[in-house]
Amino acid sequence: GNSVTQMEGPVTLSEEAFLTINCTYTATGYPSLFWYVQYPGEGLQLLLKATKADDKGSNKGFEATYRKETTSFHLEKGSVQVSDSAVYFCAPYLGGSQGNLIFGKGTKLSVKP
Amino acid sequence: EAGVVQSPRYKIIEKKQPVAFWCNPISGHNTLYWYRQNLGQGPELLIRYENEEAVDDSQLPKDRFSAERLKGVDSTLKIQPAELGDSAVYLCASSPPPRLSTYEQYFGPGTRLTVT
Image 1: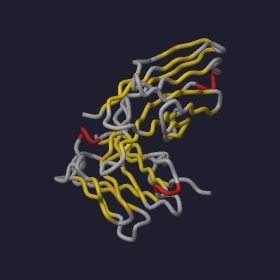
Image 2: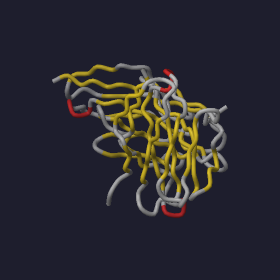
Image 3: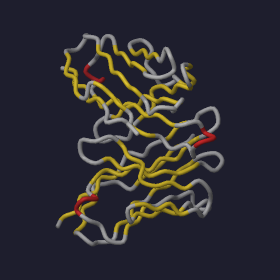
């Protein structure tokens, strides 16, 4: 069946450290891929997306590349800030009759000054 | 442009009581979703509407949950009667027609339900 696996958290980093959050998925076909972010007490916000193989999504210094061969969409940021502390969700979009996002369990990131 | 609006933001009820959540999607978004997010988990789809039609309600516990979107705009999700295990955040999301987007969804702030 369709599923997504994210790196388990929590992840604690110092400010300006490099961030990687791994995400792999199983799905039929080639789904569009999304990363959403949830700041404390808020709803989910779209962070970035990629719709086909080798596409790189980017926003706010975050990047993720659609890797068809490894069915992965790892999130990276070169230098994290305290304001990046949040929960990050990887979510492939399953089209067709399903038309839904499948969310991972989320990875909580805490950035210390 | 206004985002997805949900109310109430918080609700505390006793078990066996009914509760209802309301959602107004972004204008022009014909697809509306209700998700449930348990603590420490990702959102899980309950129901998806295309205009006023529920096209995927396979994960909706129909013995106690119901939803409607009568005019294809705003929507109501109801639980009756509520159980302790229903405590969660209920999220509403909407998306524009596929011809205008790449399937991203826009989420409201959610309703945090506590059943005591």
